[in-house]
Length: 126
Image (cartoon, rainbow, N blue to C red):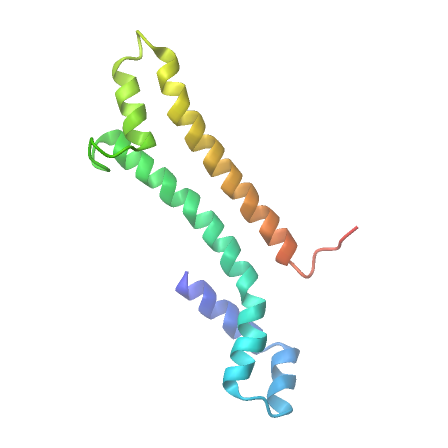
């Protein structure tokens, strides 16, 4: 994440609006906060919305195989593991945690796509 933000800020620093602000005498802090960070916040938010589903899935997987969150705490992965043990008697018990994981991950990915489209200045509207 830090490398992407750094790369984004370096690329924005070379843009014309940043150089124009430097030429008219804007301070480095003003250029950073008023020009660079404002333009970099869109890709940062999009990256965060793609990292959160990754973390959710990783936690659920680790809990499913038994090395994640311990038994008293609730986790979709541990719920799926518990349901796997009684799968022959109650097959529907496995559906709830897996559907919740899928819906959460897909909705956050779609949210990231929507935010990416909203913050993309090169996308034509119409």
